[in-house]
Length: 109
Image (cartoon, rainbow, N blue to C red; front, side, top):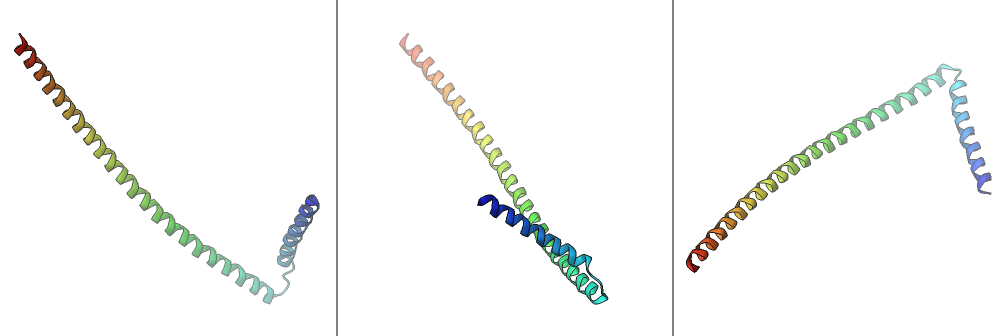
């Protein structure tokens, strides 16, 4: 029954496509041609408006992505600076510890 329903749907879709094609093929008068042209121009305007909205949305997303990438780069630089500072502090602590060890070895002798 699922296959039958699928085939019936395919027939309906094909029939609707054929009807639309037949409508365009059966334009016989100037009035019908004007109506068809009016419809097509309306569709064109609608498509252009939608394209414009999508382009605007795309540009906003692109700008947002650029801002996020800039912030990410800034954060990565900040992390690198903090890591360098941490390494410097660690080195100073090690040097300080070595000096204390040397002093305590000298006091033991």
